Image (cartoon, rainbow, N blue to C red):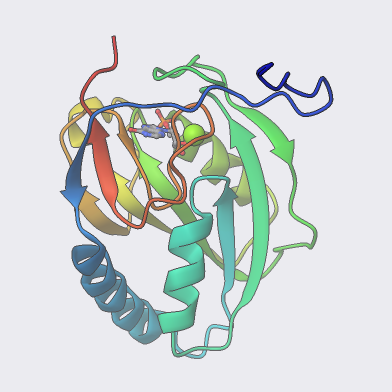
Length: 190
Ligand code: IMP
Ligand code: MG
């Protein structure tokens, strides 16, 4: 029997198969997201905040967080890139998708998946500050303190982690693993 030929229109990409070690479980994530949501609800009460989700990595965290947040909020999305498909930053941040609405005079809650060198966060804060918001608070699910060369303030941190490359719960390696419900470390990256 002849083996089926891959369709030229839909060639299947090779699936990644790395050794993953769970670093933060689904249960840990749920508990911490709850805690942060409670803290935010207190700090942002009556402020009519706008939540800004930094795509793509923060989409899972933001989706969970805002559903635990006992506050009226609006949401915006922004996409920046600095990594491309690499595991280390290229050192240059590019704005790839801008907010749909003005944040002038609004209390901004900027939500990041992870702060590594701090370069992306530094760029985003400067970019948003130029739009005249009433205030900017930053919330990052993960923080790698060892690599934080740009000293930018993070107001809410989910977990501080060692400076290993991690995936899951929105974070990717070459586009994959965002759908894992936990955070895992990739053991076998070159
Ligand atoms: P920074 O500019 O070096 O702070 O990098 C921040 C961005 O790099 C994050 O928003 C992530 O998209 C990406 N990033 C940094 N570390 C990791 C990681 O361990 N796994 C997946 N993405 C990462
Ligand atoms: Mg990424």
